[in-house]
Length: 203
Length: 176
Length: 127
Image 1: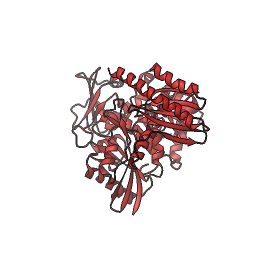
Image 2: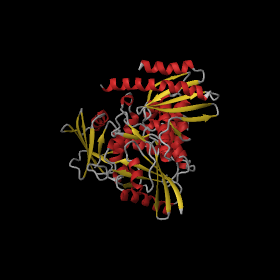
Image 3: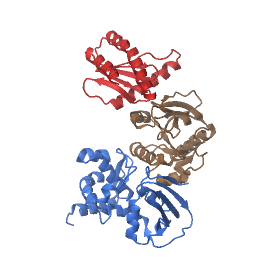
Image 4: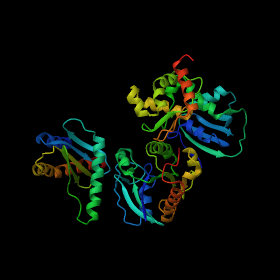
């Protein structure tokens, strides 16, 4: 059975993980008890302390506020279907966070020496993420680890790891094996598009 | 007789030393010392475990790594000339999984050799299933198998499975 | 703890050839150290514990008893490792052209002091 504590797991990765399942994620936290109903990759319901939250902004707010406690996943038919938001959307909303991103607790950041590559892009990035990608993007295109980025840019290692954890959860970067995969033209094209938007290059 | 080297690795408390001791057919060289901090058990490996086991026509030299980060200087040395590695995780201790995932990503990133994951303590209640662990690690289900590290037959089964995969898929990296 | 530090510092100060001494727990945590210049104490403590444990297994395997001393001769120096009772391990890093006999004499002379001081510190902690 799937269970654990948010002291060790990032809520983002838990959501990503149960994203393809059907069931209920129950989170018991000091802020209150939360039930998230998931079906076919979509969040269908959100109950906070017995109150059914139907406003997506409030769902997002409550979701990001949960920082400690334990979780348990119960598979099966969902009882509540108040709305339908792709889990990816909820997870991606983290990259558009402003100041809250600094406060977001990351229990298990990326390993400093695991090599990552830029593998996707997204609209509506926050200033923080944009600024990070401006410096780290060119390194990540050629594959880099948090430690290498920290050494080459002087950015604080813990901050680099935090940003990369968020980028990994949202699919913008992914870990790669040491041997570089052969050039993927379409991937390169998408990556150039991303950098173009981050750096505000003319088309 | 083919001879291969398999490294048994994974986070603290996942059952590496136990696994090597269960399956080895020769007396195990272990470097267990009393733990001065609370890691959930009384002893910890400070250098390596070494054992050997013959399965069918293959002699497997097993090298168990220390789990604690401050002995990470051993990991690189122990991986030299390894045919593959078995990554153990304690399925009864979910809080060890995120750290295990990060450690596995590090291994996958830096060593392009075959590996499987052994989900230990499957004999206990309230454990994560091997399928769920595979999903959390974002790996295909066939990479993760349940195992009871204290049981010789179970440990042998895991190694036999690994050998089978080696024969079918070859000795180069299996996962991209 | 101060007395332990004093004993180790004294070893380094009084002998021109001893570059550093590190006292570590058997599971690789630093207890105390003294050095000329910087050393990565945490790493050193872990390495010393590994060496000590491996040495014990090696000598026991060939049935020649427990190790009393490990000596590693390297291009630019030497490293000695001693068990201090059952509760700690001492690593000593020296220059290469060390008068091995003299250095060891000094170290062996203070080992009992270190052992009893360590016992005192540990029993005070547990008590």
